[in-house]
Image (cartoon, one colour):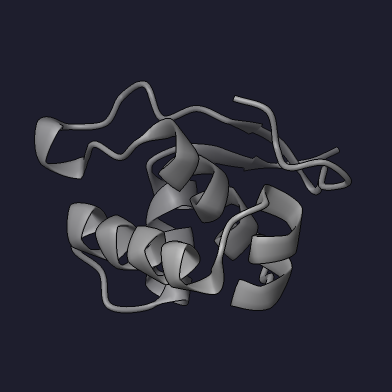
Length: 88
């Protein structure tokens, strides 16, 4: 999975070890990457070429899959599970 164009604060995004209840789509993985970068919905829309409504749907699905309630918790889970690694 490649980060959205112009984004590179993390070394890699590896979601291979997800449990079935935590599975998310490749597009949702891109949105999760943007969330971890702290980007607002509008910027995610622009970078990934989707509507704000679609971004909101993806974010809600990510929260359900990861069993979290907000962006910070989703980012913490991604780091804790080893899906995101700080860049060098």
